[in-house]
Image (cartoon, rainbow, N blue to C red; front, side, top):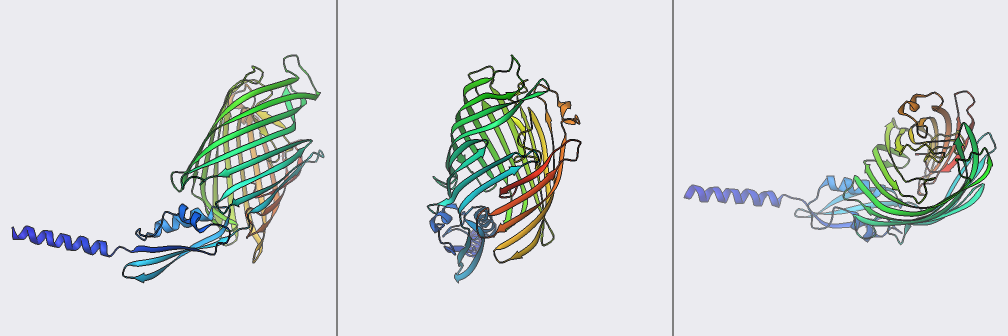
Length: 421
């Protein structure tokens, strides 16, 4: 009996001693922020007053904060208070978040298009993105976007998008080409769910009107010259994100899977399923280098249609190739580049980059062997510059010049805001 009592006494003494040694957060303070609300930072943070001091959670909170558009850089400090209580400070270096969006792209065929926009990425100090754009790509287009990933709590948010896109699109059939005026007018609502630091989901529906109107070029009785079709698009997105940011440098891995099912009211634009996955890998190289790569693998329903969903485009996948020069029902594209900081002082960074963009497509109604067909493979190496403002979100003005290395391929400049990927 005495031995049992003694054992219980020692066990209780050990447990009390263990708990007494736990370091506890007495208070969590946010400093350095001006527009970004401290209450919002605390809502996002796993660490909070009264919880055990855990450096793993602090590191995770800081990584999450550095991904926010409003944050240029963040770090934490821990100070002893009394007993086993500690004060934690999250230090924020803010970005300017009212940002113009500019994209300009040309080819040696004198094609010219641009998109101008204005976005606020930290509305109400709550990491809410709101803005819109105007695009001129032969025809005029516009769009309005609202995105609040943490609108309801740390896990749940909402996005609403509307756009009316009007472009001239080539349509390919019978080894010939014709030009159509293409219109896509859509309204989209997405539920945003982020259960933890590395994983994120989006689910939603997009109602849109899709129209094709013949302009010029080849014709075929089986290819309609006018189409106007109402559609519903059901969308699901899954992202795994383990990227770490240090100003202009990025390291880590990210994967984004996008799945869509599109209904239709016309056999000329039949319903289809489409999905693609973007794999991103970034690695620091020495003190000033950054290697970045993106691999996209995508497939859709393999209908033999001139309106196939995957395009070969200057501003999307191959720099220098031109504005939508081909289409397919499958795509494998890799973009890889080395970025090197040539000059850095205070807020300004000049980066140079050398890149290779390469891809191949499956022809509409074709086979997997199309990917190895030399007629479908395109390779575009090139060089570029990045002019970076370290205190303005996504303030990266890029200029890239890509040139095709296969016979007859074009070459051209691509201008834009933000890294290409």
